Image (tube, rainbow, N blue to C red; front, side, top):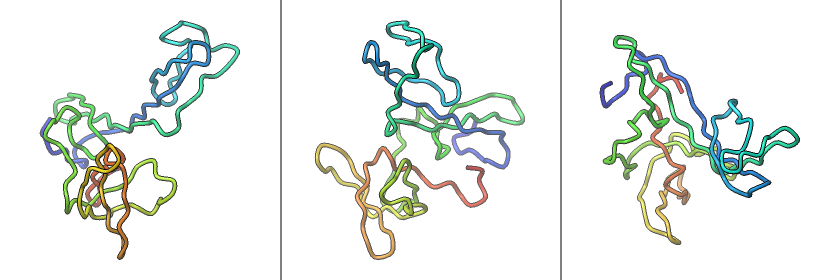
Length: 150
């Protein structure tokens, strides 16, 4: 597949990966949303009598893309960039969306003012109207182009 994905020429679907935890061995594990495991992958305790807990803040969304001409599948980040593209980064001036945001759900299609190191992590300063909002960089993704399937 090409580096830039044309969503008009591909078939695609969202894949959500959830971080769960086992109450028996108290270990985290990951599973696809809607495709729950039958037992803990760490201690192998069956999930018959209880449902494992979910870490609500730890979920990642990817897209499964199928090239309509070649039939070759690829998994990419929600912004359409290849997952293994080490050169990818959100930069000042980009138009972005914030994912898993509860306090400021209106932060969609906002401009990155700047990026800074703050309290042990990288944060994006996003401009909405005349205000700046500080959001952890891992929750900031490029906004899809107009007309692209989300």
